[in-house]
Length: 153
Image 1: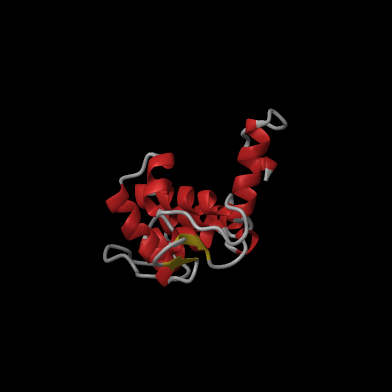
Image 2: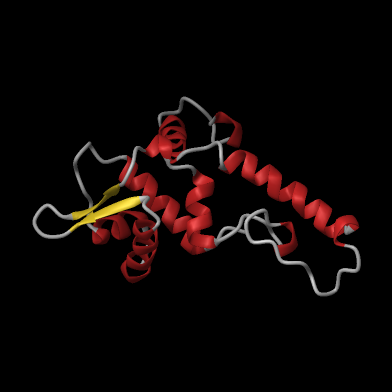
């Protein structure tokens, strides 16, 4: 499940994707316009900055901006930075695998096999969808050009 940290991080990235080239946004502005606690957003933006997804500038004209084009920032990448692995349980993770203590046969575990399928389905969508795709979909829905279905990306 996506945590509030992951959700707010995605909102912040989409917000930054809407800025004109070369412009930055203050954390306070992003927080206010997206109903996010500024203190919480500061921590999220710091994690995104450390991961190279956003950049910050201090002083006059300072603020936050995307560190690379929105089309190059995949949703799955951002979620992993903020929430960790996509897998619903550790034994189904591709990046942070940990076996369960109670499992006698990891390879044949029916729970693990199902969670691997769930993880792979999520990764298929999230790793092929960019922040630019998220912004474009929301704009199309707002303009009445498309419905909010997941398959419009």
